[in-house]
Length: 183
Image (cartoon, rainbow, N blue to C red; front, side, top):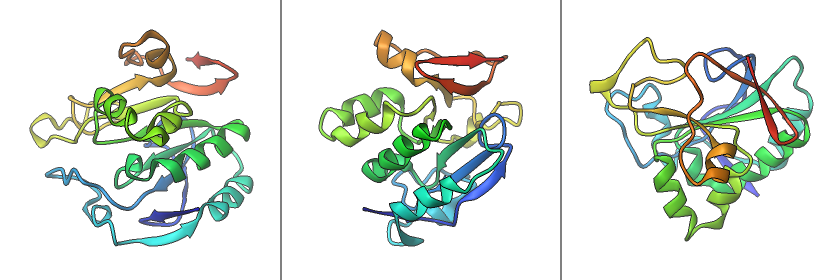
């Protein structure tokens, strides 16, 4: 299976989720948010096709990383490939964050028609959802660009059937079996 990436993996990020993370920059985004910090990732034919096995072997060589973050572009547009990578990362003990321009509610609806979206969601610890909106831009938001975007605890949300937010004063650092460790 292949995935279209905007760039090679970026390790040692401290702004794309808590701790030290490796970011997977997907290529292709339908949202085209005004003011997006990654407009070069919007074109679905841009970037480069990479075999998912290459990403997996790159994850094997990571050191001192707390987790991975899917960003882009919109990773949900390549949910099957992202799911395969997320499952592998989970097996390595990494926690998983994902940025998407879709809302959680939209993803649940899309997931009724496209199973890979629900499969991918099942591996994500925290989803940063919603389009970046310039009118709600804030430098005070933790791990997001605009106040309309939410930090969603995906596991709790899927179990409860309603959106469960990660409290602003905590960070999801590590995934252990079926529970989160908050600090």
